[in-house]
Amino acid sequence: MTAPLLGRLAALSAAPVPGGAPESGPVSGTAPEVLADRPDGTLVRSGRTVAKAHAPDCDPRDLAARLAVAAHPLLHGILLPPLPLTAPDGHLTLAEDGRPLTRWPYGSPVSPDDPDAAPWEDAARLLARLHSVDPRQLAGPVPPMRGPAKAARALTRLRTARTTHPPRPGPGPLSAAADAIERAWAALPPWARGAAPPPHSAHLCHGDLHLGQLVRHPPADGRWLLIDIDDLGLGNPAWDLARPAAWFATGLLAPDIWSRFLAAYRAAGGPAVPPDGDPWPDLEIPARTLTVQTAALAVAKAHAASRPLDEVESAVVDACARMTSLPQQLAPGASDVG
Amino acid sequence: MQCPKCHAPMQTYNRNGVQIEQCAGCRGIFLDYGELESLTRLEAQWTQQAPPPPAPQAYPAAPAWGAPHQGHHGHHGHHGHHRSFGHMLFSS
Image (cartoon, rainbow over all chains, first blue to last red; front, side, top):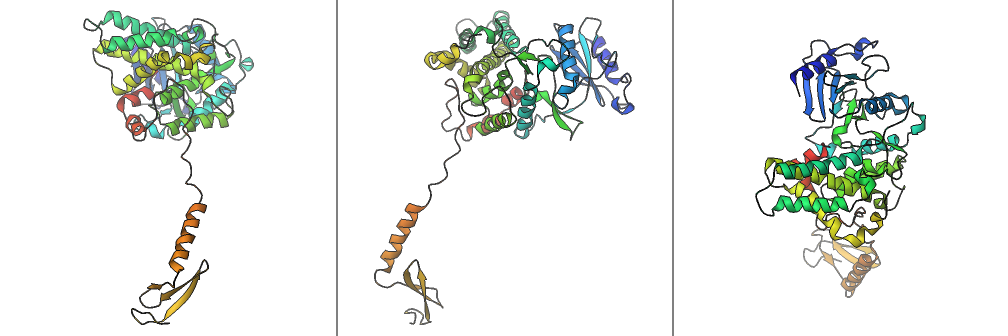
């Protein structure tokens, strides 16, 4: 992140909202604070307002369509709506380097120190409501959900890390892990790898659900809302359940938390899985893909840092290895080729 | 009847059809011939009729490639507070 862009974000977060009520603007005298600074997004907060620089490869037209969805009344109470920037319905501007910039109300996040107290049921209910929105009621065409594309990008990152940071000569644990990930990836159907249109793709999906994607607005005691629309779009709604499903399947998430999450989604009428019975026929492919994606990113980071995998990362890689050592049990999923 | 031990008066109670005498002083119990066997038999019937202990909550359905979940008690607690998993919960 360059200093000029940080300065631009700080100014943006502190600027008044065009046509907005005085209380919707930032609190005067609040020093801007960098909330996050990653290659895929930088966030600067001033009081009640947050300015975001999106990823450099973010398509501004697709982002504008996603912003229009988040601002649509049908998504009220589900997605945090963006703040106007250039006009009442203009939610996007471009930085000097072409990166899209947006502005949002500040919401308080899930405490990273206490994941056990995370709002799993609220997350499930928000997803069920999001998936139940009729996309035809929205203003314009909605871009595809980017989940499979992000999985493919994780594999690219793994391959780049293997060539850029080769481990010491000879086969090592990281090489074996990367090979297991590649085999699990190759066993996924083309749609899950972002190489073909997905089946069941008529639903509005978040595309990147994790506990960092929930905030309370107004801060502290408002209702929970979903944030980060960069991957939002039409796709298979099971994708949004697949990360918790993958955490449960790999033995990382306690079974009772997974059961609570799934039960809340079903009770709210979510369409990704049948209302009762075994959900895994629908979750199988997305959960395998997100397990492979998580493992690929973990091994890529371990390569770059020349460190071994930790216990949690190893558990995810082990799950990838089991995917291809049990071919007969995976046959039903293998037929689900889009 | 007087208690053979402390000589306080004994009271007669009927429990499930079995007559037992209890001392009002030392709380000692006097059983006539065959009454111990009757109580033992009733106890055995009670145990047989008792409902089975509640079944443990069913483990949620899991895929074939999932982690083996035998003996996961404590295991999850460990991972649940593992720093690396905590980070994973909040990252793309």
